[in-house]
Image (tube, rainbow, N blue to C red; front, side, top):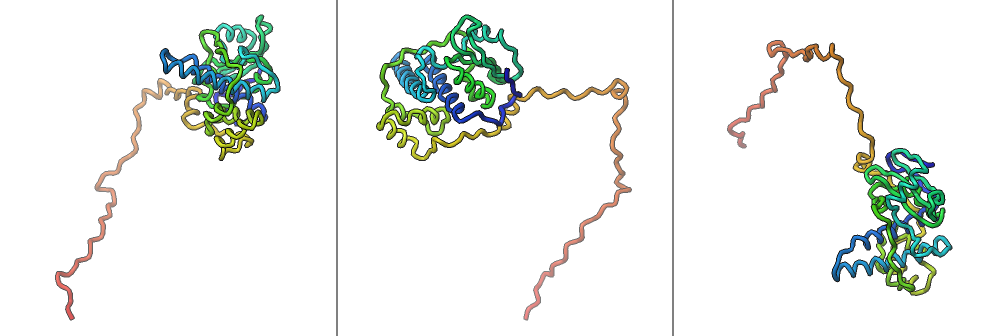
Length: 274
């Protein structure tokens, strides 16, 4: 079991761990978009984009792990029932992240079970322990607002049916160079084919995809949100409470030495002429 204080740790795992966790988070966020999409033409367009993004990120995940992950087993948030089943096998602190095999609960795969102040119960269900270990480090080191996509859901999260082929070059053109999850996806799509590589070079022209990740300390707002409640000030004893409060002595005006400012020099009414 691995626990951490109520604030993100200023430490990171390996670069490979960083990549896996960000790709998994990208997939989880797109699953949330697919789930939140509405009805009508606009909702259908949102679902089409989400499916395209999930398929592209799934390819990046397969490239990063060197193994083919079935679509139905892609990383996704834990539902409440699976979370409770995994939680029974563990005990945790204020901010926690633990990895447990779901075999003991009669399920397949691995669960990452944790708690993040400001978000609540968080969890992930994945196929391989490598991705599970990466997400455990992610839960312990990232600010709370970046982990909201991993909040435990009421019902099991289903991955939509993905196309057999996806235009990875077109997908890469929709990635955000300023987002760490998107950069991790792009890095692990390089080398797939020349057209995709060209799209990534154009989209990430001024970005070093091989640069090591940098974790900034939490902001003051984040620290306040995750900090434990401050202790109340100690109460005065009954004897001390009954005493009159002494005031600082005030000198009377007659005894205070007042210094008047010096008078301004008089200016002559006329100036001396030649």
